[in-house]
Image (cartoon, rainbow, N blue to C red; front, top):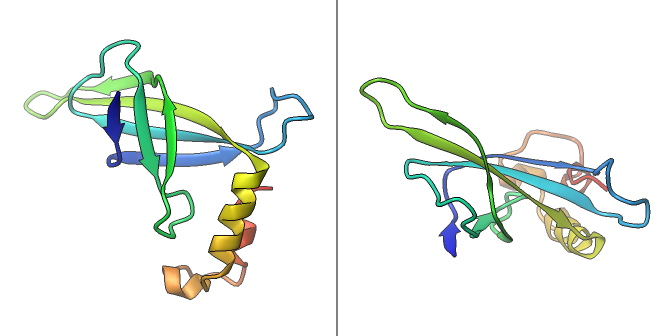
Length: 120
């Protein structure tokens, strides 16, 4: 298994329309890139900070290749996507941790409570 904790380019969360109604929580989709291709079917552990509070979550799985950018005279960059399900219990813990910090202490400029920024 390859451990990856850098070069995460995008993290999105959403309620999955394809999930059964009895499965609450959110789907986190992580996009990352590498200069060296992963072997097909290679499992990775991707560590990321969803709330920006320094607490990392792990996502383990087989990433999907999305595209490759190769420009003449520059490094080749291979882009991947990996998703996982965040349970309501984990969301609750994330919300309680982020609500303890003021938005200003994290560099945010917002009147909205940080805990409200994580989808329910």
